[in-house]
Length: 152
Ligand SMILES: [Zn+2]
Image 1 (cartoon, helix red, strand yellow):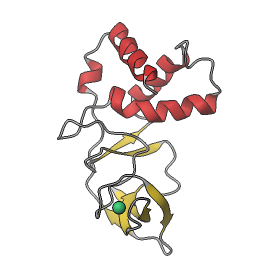
Image 2 (tube, rainbow, N blue to C red):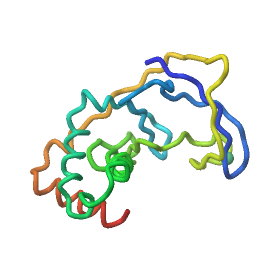
Image 3 (cartoon, helix red, strand yellow):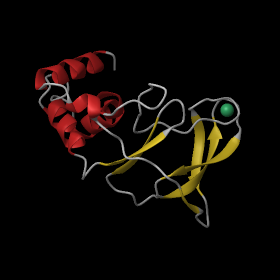
Image 4 (cartoon, rainbow, N blue to C red):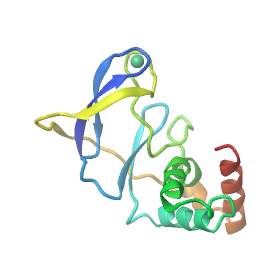
């Protein structure tokens, strides 16, 4: 898929490096990352599990009281670990996770910016899968959600 290079600066060691991301106009699309730096793609309009977790969250006593913006933030934070299969090293994918600093391995970035002019590259990225999630019953899904919300 076509991705755009972003220049990141590591918050821990101040190393600057380039890593791919979706373009600024990618609405409803996400590039998920794991702590191992593996990437996976999600189109939230096409992928029914995103709406499903959103619905579960909306009817959850802990989350239903929140403002929509706040709830959307929580959805982005918990979705990958809840509904998506793990990466090849059994770590969860996360929607807002940043790339790994090539120098120290941190995922905390001090800053990032799109390049001007943009640098586009074609990178093979698999779509997220939901084999584990799809085998769960509704009550098992709710239990998982409860557990996840409890440690937010
Ligand atoms: Zn670093």
